Length: 272
Image (cartoon, rainbow, N blue to C red; front, side):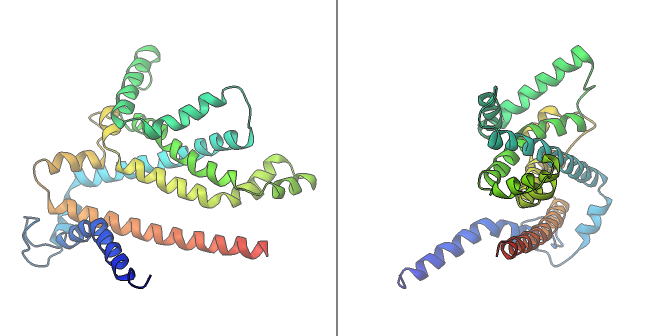
């Protein structure tokens, strides 16, 4: 085992370098003086100042954050309801259809999802007049359709391994089902809800293909702006914006990890 340890450490380091090397280089070159992102011209923070003057990038980033937050919130609500139905109600009419609808967005190509939603929105506009055009509303609906599938899987796995005796004890003591859900079930599955929200937020913020189909001229997300800019050459302003996003994501993940760790310790303490 000791003879394999250096090999395992080497493979681990190579894996980390492959995953995080490009991100580290992006952060380093965001402080590059030169406009050429592949040529180091000295340390400078001027591109962060240029970023603050780029209204197109900032407005696209703000729109993407709003869409992602709204999508994640709606996806958590709908995904939790779907997970409750699949775990707590073993047999009901339409269960097979619900399972298929939950699983389909996980394996369906994004091009198919985007095209089908575009045709749906056009047909709905012609029939009922809503949604009028393509914009933030259509993007949120489109992102929610596949994000809630991921949330459902995460919450469903947590509910499947939950100790039902806690809920049964509360019901025997006279608590109403709604009170049991908010006082017992919801705190227990809270880590999975947070994980599902973060996953849905990331999927929405990162999406390019589906948003390209269902967005209009007045709603351009950050991935769409970045993709259109990269085709003409990577700008140092994009590196600066990406560095800020990486920093915010890192802080968010760190805070979430600490909260989940404290929740896990509290649950273990209560169990003993």
